[in-house]
Amino acid sequence: MNNQVDVQEIAQSARFSRFHAVILFWCVLILVLDGYDLAVVGAALPSIMKQMGVDAAKAGFMASSALFGMMFGAIYLGTLADKIGRPVSICVCVALFSIFTAAAGLTHDPVTFSITRFLAGLGIGGVLPIVTAQMGEFAPRSLRARLVTIVFAGYSIGGILVALTGKQLIEAYGWQSVFFVAGTPILLIPFILWTMPDSLAFLVQKQRADKLVKVLKKIAPEVQVSVRDNFVMPKDALITSAPVARLFQEGRGASTFMIWIAFFMGLFMVYSLSSWLTKLMAMAGYSLGSALTFVLVFNIGAVVGAIGGGWLGDKWNIKYVLVAFYAVGAVSLALMGYTKSTELLFIVVFLVGASTLGTQLLAYAYASEFYPAAIRSTGVGFASGIGRLGAIVAPVLIGTLVAMQLPLEQNFLAIAFAGVLGTIAVMMVDHRLCAANHQEARAHAAVPARTELN
Image 1 (cartoon, rainbow, N blue to C red):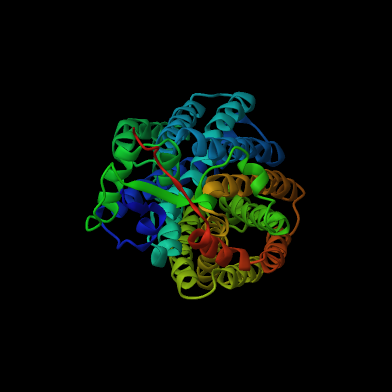
Image 2 (tube, rainbow, N blue to C red):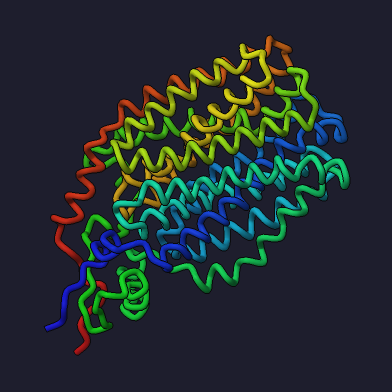
């Protein structure tokens, strides 16, 4: 009689190993590149406005074009990953954001620039939920929140790279140079396909027992498995024919809407700042170099907030950690407009980074934990995609406020209000469903990964 092997339990009970380190490396690196591609517009926006002769309101629409693409990318490419496999989907996204971000550097008018940024946005937005689901599935249970937030810290590192290199590249070679640099990641695609494993649920449903054995031996070398074993997973972890509908089933409907609202508000805060922080600091009297230093501090804060939030989320209830982060974001953003001391302002900007971008990265980890494995990419993808509406609105709304020449503090208060609404939304999520996911994973009947050969 063949042995029955619980694939999901092996993955969740494993110790962190070289296999996990490879997945972590790729997921972090991909989001470093992704973060660079997104943040590059914020650094180059003052130069683009000057060369193309556009005002703040039109520049806001130009910045939003990538975010509009990100909405569709997160929803459709995130969902597609559950059907065609994550490595292929990741490479499609990398190709999109590399080629079209570089192409944006060749444009000379706002319309063409916006089109290329929209196409790049498909890849930028699509890769976020996929790498979140990938790390979330393979991470040992005790380390999941930390590893997912470390992955998203790569997103902030991309912003740091822009802050460190943007001023020098723009001054020496023009704003186009920072876009051309973003085309190089396409060279990584063969290596990603070679080393990134497919989802366990994907391999189970495709009845790829041979690949499952190879992956499981890498995850837990001490476990004895062979292609003759009967590989099983909880039914709840397997991909269904209508994963979108499942976001609203089994009591998840109201919480799914609350997660969408939280993502909307979190991404509103993040993209208000990523698009306009440089310009707002310039309005406060700081030079381009000083303004980019604030961007650097903002992203360092985001890294600390993401990793610290992940650690706290593994130690305590991740929902309440997330609520606290949203609340701190609202308070620190409100303080930005009223802080006159440069030294204190650096501290406040650090806190803003930790509690806005850091908060959003933690929100991805929470969404990844909230949804069962079968709909994880879809759940995180839809939350990210719907949240992109906040990202789309943010540059346009803040650009309109900037064009109205309102007092600086009112711009920051408008962003802070989103943090208040995000705090309320997360408080209303039914966190009991996260625990239910783990209980169902153990209780449900399992489905074989392969049919018996006669």
